[in-house]
Length: 510
Ligand code: F6P
Image (cartoon, helix red, strand yellow):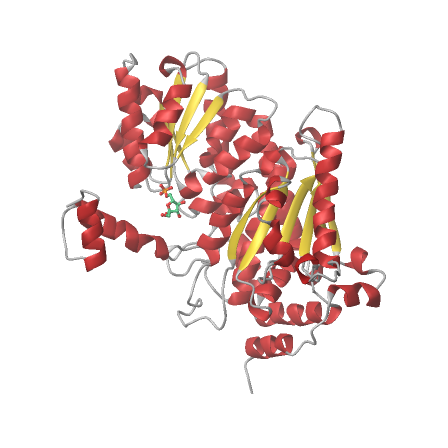
């Protein structure tokens, strides 16, 4: 007798193969049954409106029932409850994952603490807007990974029609990145945000020191007086030289790639204002409420995870692609890459046993329509099966002739239709096999509230996938070994393999 989880996977593996065309032919209501609309009015904070369509995936009624059975076998409801009640969902580090509390979803004490931290950030943001630190036109935000990708993406998405402060996000240790930011900023009117959960990350601390030097070399008498620290390690920030009044802390239980909602979102708040930042949080809470309050296939993030598991574990897809048909979401694929790959790129279960199948696929993607003219050839006619997410906004981001936006949306929908329908031709080089899956996420608009809901949807989708695979999505030990080896190279320590030794010599590192 196999255990309930293995039995659930066996049931899934035994499903009859089915084509998309058959699924639509079998059930005229398929689109309605596989679509979910999530909407909410948030008063003065705006509204959330988003439509998800999973009907162009191979999820049949039988597959959905079998996945619901798997979710039950994995005790999905208990795992979700643990997430929102501050349980230890990150057992390797003995931590809760309290990013939800930052937007009001979580245990009371954590939600209260988050409210106080948000109020503190709000006071600083508003004081800066009111001129308390003199004229501030630019913010150089220094951070990497989760301390950079969220702010960069959200600032880019929400400031296309102007920002209250011009934000430059710098992450790479390659000095060119920082030089480029310097070139665009007036040192006398620039603030520097040093964003690091640990306040120890080499890239960030090196860039922060160079930014201090740049300010000092360019006539700013007290460079450290121009710094705001965003960190879960305030003592370290004080030691480094930041005054306590300009340290915006966040809790240790908020993971880097889940930290946009905390003070790591400071550049977003500075660029768009506190009201819009609160709208971002409120939009995320709409998705939290949906995720907590819906079961099985009615739950959008869980349904997305069913499709993800279907393609990764049952169809052997090694990648999944995300195409944003909107310039405002141009950085979303990069953001999702870290969220999904750093969270679920794991090889052992919660119990430390080898996993029973592949884990996170490689997330990749780009912007439509550009990507159509570059990589879609492979999606339509290549030998890999790649499930695709299309994300578009009904309202345009531009003020030009509506023909632009109409063409953008038409192209987005045409690609999903073409992938599914395919097309026959006498010449095999001109034939499209079709039966290729896609999901479409159609947003009413890309405003702060809807963006918050969209990001929270992906966080919960990632968590739901982890629960179904029984892995811990909240640690990231895989990033440490390379860091340790770089330190050994720096210290001139240790014997390396012949290839690395030769390359070190060629690069002048030895
Ligand atoms: O090296 C990976 C990582 O730890 C990410 O998980 C994290 O978001 C990033 O580095 C930055 O870390 P920190 O915010 O502590 O500087």
